[in-house]
Image (tube, rainbow, N blue to C red; front, side, top):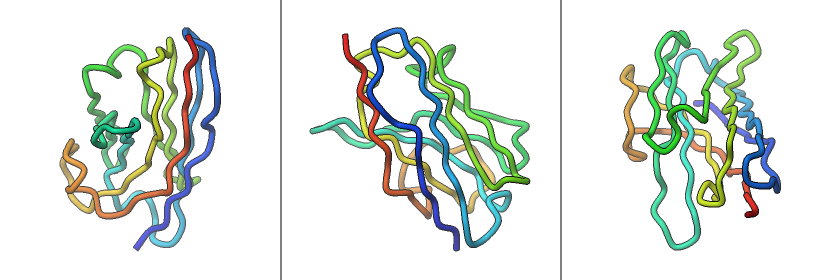
Length: 124
């Protein structure tokens, strides 16, 4: 199995940028489709972005398209989420997740391993 640790969250003003990182240990991250999810207080966890095992394919939620970019470095066992033009509604805990499937799936239940999350707060 794989262990995931997120970093890079923080407080940023609307319009600003943050880069989240997810470090994988244990089994090599290249064995998994990797995804980012977020959960705001009182809301369900929602899909943000996913990237294929090789990094050649990506999938984004409509809310993330054009503003967020997911990438991975298999040599470093890391996955990143570059978030630009942040909005107050992007405020949430952001989670890195690994899936044993090969498809870039959006439901959270299709992901087998999860990190502890990193908080992103966007002020208006």
